[in-house]
Amino acid sequence: MSAGSAGVTNRQVRLRARPVGLPRPDDFELVETAPGELSLGEVRVRARYISLDPAMRGWMNANRSYIRPVEVGAVMRAAAIGEVVLSRHHRFQVGETVVGMLGVQELGVAHGDQLLKVDPALASLPTLLGALGGNGLTAYFGLLDVGHPEPGETVLVSAAAGGVGSVVGQIASIVGCRAVGIAGGAAKCRHLVEDLGFDAAIDYKAPQGGDLRKAIEATCPDGIHVYFDNVGGEILDAALGQLAVGARVVVCGAISQYNAEGRVLGPSNYLNLIVKRARMEGFLTFDYQDRYAEGHAQLAQWLGEGRLRTREHVVKGIERFHEALMLLFTGDKLGKLVLELQ
Image (tube, rainbow, N blue to C red):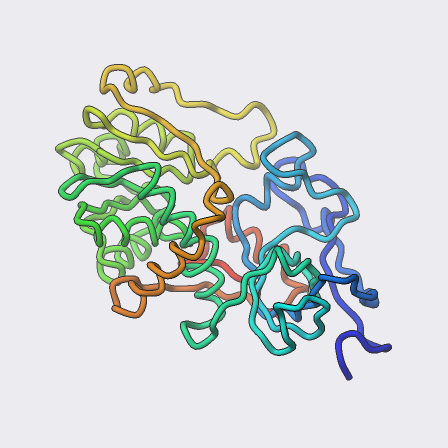
């Protein structure tokens, strides 16, 4: 029976209420529906893995941002990878593997123009969703196009054991920089150095002498030339204090602030941008859509050469969405976080 036939059901996670602070289980609901008919140009995809990313927390808020918020009662927005099961778009055939914003559901629908066809022979599906997908492209364009690293420079990245940060550090090494990662816990720091080839790692939960600023100073004695920020807050402030002259601060995210119930804390150490003649710049991966093929091809080449290594943290079952989502904020994961669907 095809996914468009009678009797087929689709389980999906919908946003039930806008979270205040950390999302709670009852902010979401798991519902079962019957898939509707496809319009011309649309494609139905059976999702195999769903990407869980910090940006999802921002999408739950009602305030204006770079993308419209997820409406209460709507399917939770998320990128996913899976197989085409029904197509009314000329470029897609049943059985092909695609990636797109399909939502947290078993059967996603998107217009073919919003889907990217990928080759499952290149890598595992979680890797195609992460290091060769949105996370890898974020790292690629954010570091190279915004950070402009030069050989011999020091690149510091926060949340370095996550889906984006782990790729940033490896690209920094590939282009001849000294890669330093900040992560939480000794195991993650060992992973960065021993498995991913970072030059050094700083455990923000137990920095040298209990002082993060001193640990960054000791690990980056010549200053930070590029700081790739994924967390904001105190770690951002500590990094700003050790910038080299002409440094570039790449603002990718601020996960430490996403669940704040009051005002978001900005950097108090920003005056060092003046002293060091540095710049601080945010970016969105969407700005580079016309170059996705370039980024994907380069990342795939590095992966094939063994210069880019990946690790995924997989949680099984759509019913465990909230449990899996919370791992983004507790830090109890290693590598790219994905939800596997049965």
